[in-house]
Image 1 (cartoon, one colour):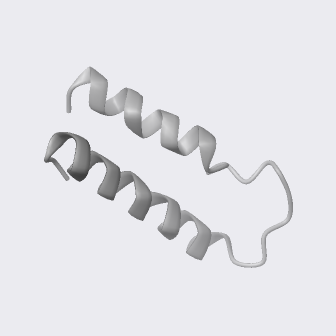
Image 2: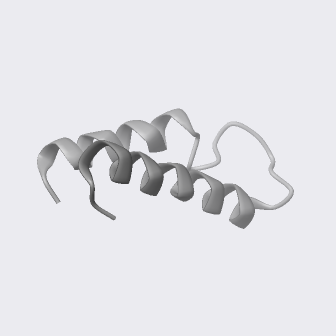
Length: 50
């Protein structure tokens, strides 16, 4: 994974509140799965990698 790809992934994770610090969530695993889906789609769209 290149540096640019890692920067993109970290940016998505920061925007999406991946660590769950901003409130109680009823089902955190579903939330994490949705966020990771966004990360995978973004990396695939921008860089052609999974």
